[in-house]
Length: 251
Image (cartoon, rainbow, N blue to C red):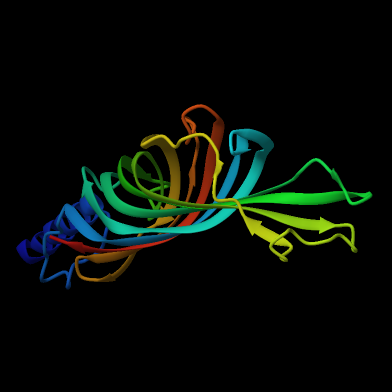
């Protein structure tokens, strides 16, 4: 009788411990072990970026065109920590290095040249790098290892590398630029100055997959929602659609 009661108490204790931590990391029913509440790990993401705005491009202070749409393929890498308040609720924090490129193209107004209309297009390519911190919260759905989360990204601009080009696209018999090429780099091309930091809320979905005692990996998908412009005096917003993976270790 007492042996059965003892086993029942052990099972109840194990169930409570598993639910409290959200993971089944017991070696066996005979060897119950406590689970850590704080985890830290390496994280990385692939980011598909969609840019939109009203970026006025000038060359030698002369207005040339307005960029409105662009795309980019970037990445981020860094560390992430999670602290579990209950088996369903956790706070997290990230420190990231973010590579954020953008490519814009717009056709210029046709220009008369040697008895014909010359058609060109402007190309703006940029790679911005940010130091980013993100506090957030995540909650497990349906008492499972699937979760939904929300965070606030705060990014600080580290570097910006931009190139402006003009390219002749027609007509077929159009003469090249005086340099002899059909493409030229615009050394004095400019857009509005970039803001030194940005704030961006992010929604995240993922799954916590255990792969060892006190260890789990979390694949995620997320959406970064633009709130503020990236530039000081022109409209430039960026949507970030991301897929990532974090590998955690309890400490």
